[in-house]
Amino acid sequence: MAAAAAAAEPELSLGLLPTDPLLLIFSFLDYRDLISCCYVSRRLNQLSSHDPLWRRHCKKYWLLSEADKTQKNQSWKSLFIDTYSDLGRYIQHYAALKKAWDDLERYLAQRCPRMILSLKDSVQEEDLDAVEAQIGCQLPNDYRCSFRIHNGQKLVVPGLMGSMALSNHYRSEDLLDIDTAAGGFQQRQGLKQCLPLTFCIHTGLSQYMALESVEGRNQYEIFYQCPDQMARNPSAIDMFITGASYSEWFTSYVHNVVTGGYPIIRDQIFRYVHDKECVATTGDITVSVSTSFLPELSSVHPPHYFFTYRIRIEMSKDALPEKACQLDSRYWRITNAKGDVEEVQGPGVVGEFPIISPGRVYEYTSCTTFSTTSGYMEGHYTFHFLYYKDKIFNVTIPRFHMVCPTFKVSTTRMTQEENMTGNGGSWALLSVFLVLAVFCNYGETHSYDCYKFPLCDDEDIEKEFKVFSFKFKCCQWDLCNKGVANMVTKTALVPSSLMAVIWSLYF
Image (cartoon, rainbow, N blue to C red):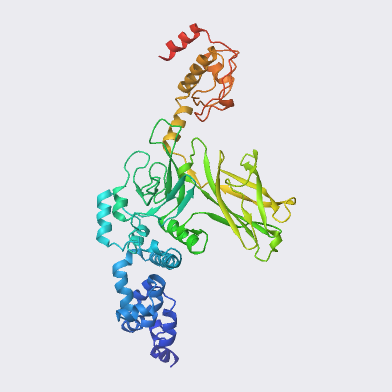
């Protein structure tokens, strides 16, 4: 009897659960799982089509609202399917990029309304496919997705991707539309398979995206090009890295803009970075600093890293009127990554002697360079009170750090260095020896090209050329950067007969 009763009971399955528990379970499923449930049974097909289930996915993946649903007069499910049919290949990127564009447009509408007018409408799939056929490379999905929302901007000033200005220098980067970018696609050595993303009509500066993993770049990496000024080969191009992917590059930039990380100055986005802890208050006066790295004025070879900083000096609005004062001088203590310190003193700031009174703000921009990839500055201003001119006081300038972006050295230079330290070591040693020999015969000199060889010590030259008691100095003991020598000191003369023997051996 028990066995017969057990046989009569239906087997417990998901399909036998009541509707409400099933709908609750389905509410945790992703859109792919919901679609799969449609093919299990008629009942699950009906339940997985329950329209409120698709509302979450429409908002999560496509940022669609009730207003969108009402406007199109569709169910949530059909709205999801229609949007997927058009943008499905971008489902992993669309929400983040659409939100970034929406946030940026809202922010610019309030702060830089004329910049909105430069944005171009979206392109279609066939336009992107045509560009891929034209350049012979595939575009990353996140890049394509962004251009399905906005096709970059017109070549106008100010540029959407930020500006920077000094007294004699101005940069403003436009986000290139797809056709202009395709026209600038690079096939030459040093920038092979690189697509420009931005362009500055004043400096010619661009940020590029690597469409292939060639010449030491990672695929889809974004960078500023930086020609190696010490290489004879024009294809030797170093790179300052600005992003690992288009999504990261664009969304992080927008985040800095809309959160106030980048200030709006004269209706332009300026790419100054402000450390909120970089603030110092002395009495009623507060000094804060923001900084920016300028890749177009920097180089890796030779090491020259250019930074600009913007300083804000503000007196509290609650200060007493007699606290009004005038800046007399500045003092800077500048330290590079090696710990080398330089001290600078001078009258005023950028040729001015600003007066600070309650509630007033004074801002100015200046710049500095380092031969190391980072450094910091700190110091103080000296003021005198307007009502008590003999009374002076110092106002602290907080320490602020400047660090250049991650960079990559060109593969051309790396290959040359490998050759110099490999089979080409003897040739390099010979070059050094010949140059040193010529200059040593003429005593001291103050400028010449210095050649690289594996190790800079006497034993290498003695061993290679069988020359003993040979002593030298070159490039301040550094032969590793093809730089400019400060001095070559003669301590031995090389006989011309020995030179003849060397030439006969090698040539």
